[in-house]
Amino acid sequence: MPIFNELKLAKELMKFPSVTPVDAGTINFLARKLRSLGFKCKILEFKSKNSKPVKNLYARLGSSRPNFCYAGHTDVVPPGKLSDWTVNPFKPAVKKKHLIGRGANDMKASIACFVAAVSKFKSKKFKGSISLLITGDEEGIAINGTKRVVEYLKRKKEKIDFCLVGEPTNQNKLGEMMKIGRRGSITGYLTVCGTQGHAAYPHDANNPVPVVTKILNQIENIKLDKGTKNFQPSNLEIVKINTDNTADNVIPGEVTATFNIRFNDKHSSNSLKKKLNNIFRKACRKSKCSFKISYMVSGESFITVPNKITIMIQNTIKKITKIKPELSTSGGTSDARFIRKISPCVEFGLVGKTMHKIDEAVSISDLKKLTHIYRNILINYFK
Image (cartoon, rainbow, N blue to C red; front, side, top):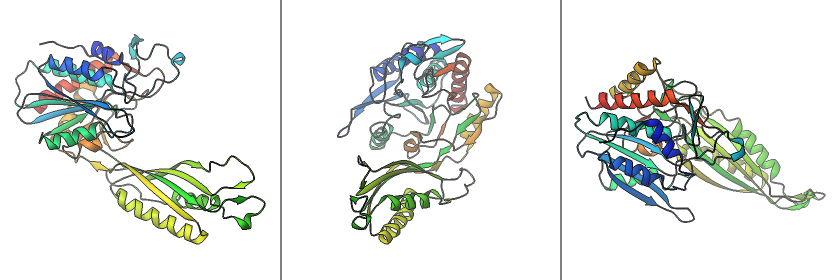
């Protein structure tokens, strides 16, 4: 059986220009590597109306339980202006003991570390299974990736006993933080409709702009909570306001606004919708305007209550990095929001300081350490 080197494998994965949701051959390449280790691989392609098809992979080594799963994604964000990079983002290179290229820490290198860890762990006999759930649209709208694979696994009655998501969880040093949950995320798309008219004759119009201004000021100043034991405070951010008005002497007929809420376990998406809709209804009734509102829920808040496996992973990280990782629920959303419906999960990966940036990079030392951490997690899990 082959033994994989994490640096070499990371370079190979990063050469594929898999800008979300384009696969560019990454999933097939990874499946070939895993089959050489004895994994049974199922490539799952899903698509929706008006969206490109997304390739995903579920691979499993062994058939008995417990089933320890590693989850990650092979898609990356666009590289931006290529001339700003010191290397071609899809021709990764090592400079000053760092691997530079798109996907260096988010998150092809993490996948390489896990596969390398399995190849080095494989010689040991173990009772159970190791699986990988790899998606190709985590960086995009995330509707044809992990979400659909989880639905597929539920239909097939495939059990996962614990999942480790390899997202970059550390800001400055490897070992600082592991995620045991995430806040929920809901985006609201609000339209307030008035009556269009001439700016010189406001009495013949009904301007929706002041109404939206008052509404946004009100919801911006709502104190949703002070945080909870496991979560930071919820926050609402206004991200867009638009009238689509091309003339300066016209009172617009409607105004649109977009806002996003990151919420903790004191709320649900439904409770927030109800609270906000009441505000919109009262404000528009008072101003004789109408409103339309739609929401997109990216995920509800969740937490994996620390247990013996969580503590084992925390101790394994500490032993290798000499840092005890904080158990955190900070940051944005991840595909853990889908996986937690079928399995407890935690997240631990590389340092994400340069993720999504020009010259995304990871230290060679961290690659070696992460491979060592992942291998030791497998050893300790299957003891």
